[in-house]
Length: 189
Image (cartoon, rainbow, N blue to C red):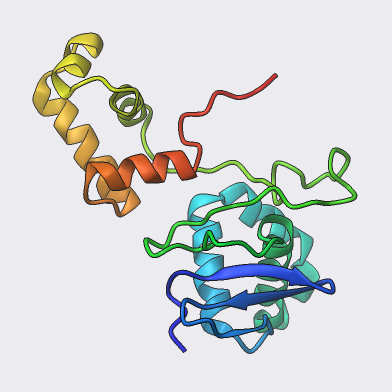
């Protein structure tokens, strides 16, 4: 079974299930090492605070590494992928599409904003983020260079370096990525 992309997770009777691009669906189990490892790698890379909290939450299981990793992924999926819909939770680019899952503890859970609805960490430098935000907001590279007092060469380097870190190859893919991951959303007070 190829589970590298276009996976839809959902919760059914308090259990996590997943559906692959070919329509195959089954309950997520500890034996699904490929799915568990793939999702855990993405959590660690892009949601490091969630990964740290999950490690802490399930530390008592570290003696059984397979169960430990499975329970971390199961919890993350329950908190962020509970609804079955037509938007893959792991898309063809390998990006996660988190959902706001109905939860009776919404607003009082100590893991909200950490494990549940975690902040995305792109590992993009502040300088790269400034350039990308202006580009995302419609400025040309030349306008960005002028606005930030940079050379066009530096602007291009910032964009190229950020794309490399994110595994992105073209502008349209970047716009989709930024939108899906709320890269430039302003925090609400």
